[in-house]
Image (cartoon, rainbow over all chains, first blue to last red; front, side, top):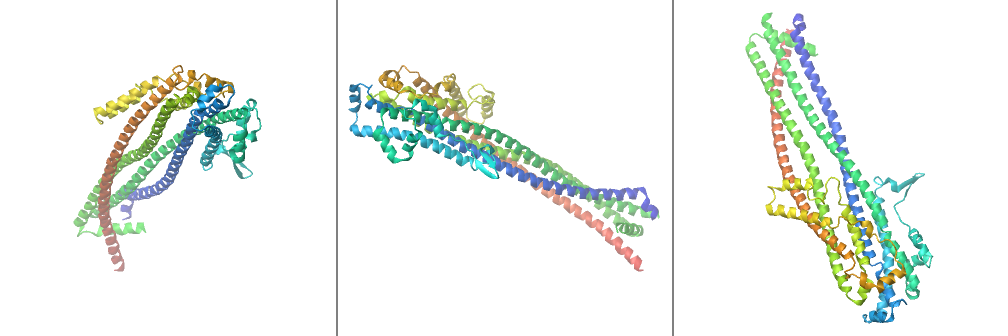
Length: 296
Length: 300
């Protein structure tokens, strides 16, 4: 019996049984590892999908603000000289009296016409300021929730985060044209926008020179609307590049998930095949043992 | 313990004489079953390879469908905005041109004031359509040819002709504005009081209905281009929607294939398990018997 046990054929078969059993355990372990990898990759893929969706939504939001600033620019620029021209036409000394009379005769009420021209002129100026404020607020409303996408707009000092969103100072816009103005007091213009008394005061007391100053300041405010358009264009370009990177990452993750998933399934099948081969080796061992008993 | 079980088995097989033939048949059946089980497992291995390839294809398709869907929706939205903007411009232009026939309008609305802002932004937006990979303004761009080849046999001849015509009109209308530089229409300089007064007094040279100024021609060329661009955009959206529909149908086919392969694999794995179970029973039969017979010997 001892001789039988030591014989090469038996040992070989026993080793085969052991090998396939171990192989089956080994493949089971690989399945567990692959399952773990798969879970991590799926979490990464979900995160990447969320990032891609977020970038795409922010691009749409920014493009909407960009559209708002460009259409506002076109709308305001088209009327930038219109009310001033109307005012000059009925009020300026250089305009011949017969022309003035001719123009005024078109209106049903002279006073209503003057009231409309002056208020619309001031409203145009207010509109320019509000469009700036709206564009800035719309942008802030996007940027302040996207710290991870726009770290350049945030600054941490002593553990406190401060925002530094793109903004254009009205005073800077004013200073650009200051040499062209007669009244160089910035507050004089700001008060018209926010205080009704000052608005009425401007309506009643403004000279042609004051109106010319308002016209210049409004004109420059409209010119500076391009600031938001350009900022958004740069940020959208940056986001599009980021989008492309994230898309590449997502594609590589999908590739990895597919590979890992198919490997996991191959390992499951390999484990089953190893088990069957182990059983086959065991059956062959039985067969050899049975056929061997006639020798004794 | 394993060694003891093997010793039991060995001594048990040595004692089988009466039922040796039956035992051999049983073992041979077991071996036969293992061959079947291995074959079944290998078949499921091959099916798994097919499923894996199809799954990869399916994920790529799903992403492409999501992206195309989003793109179609974005383009549709922008086309609507673009078209309503274009219509508003047309109405405004018609109204202002009519108003410019009055004494007041002729002096207060100049071509420069009215046309340059929209020309400026339109040219900037048109410039943004430039793509180094796909020159949309070139009628002979390989992408257009590829699209037409793709549509041939799928769309009606009439629809393909409409698509070709939209591209032709779009690229031809671009040629008329190609040389215009948006920087020439910036109009940043704030006009002085004297300049504005001069515009009012010399209104006949620059009012909206003046034939002397080229700005209205540029505006007309850009508005024509915008109209062609809307038609072109609608055709491109149609192609994208068609691709989207095809991808959705194809995805359903791939889904069905995967389900079918998966069903086959599941059945084959079940068969493998049944074979494996029978083999296990045969082995257990010998192991239990060997154990019992050896225990009986020890008790005697």
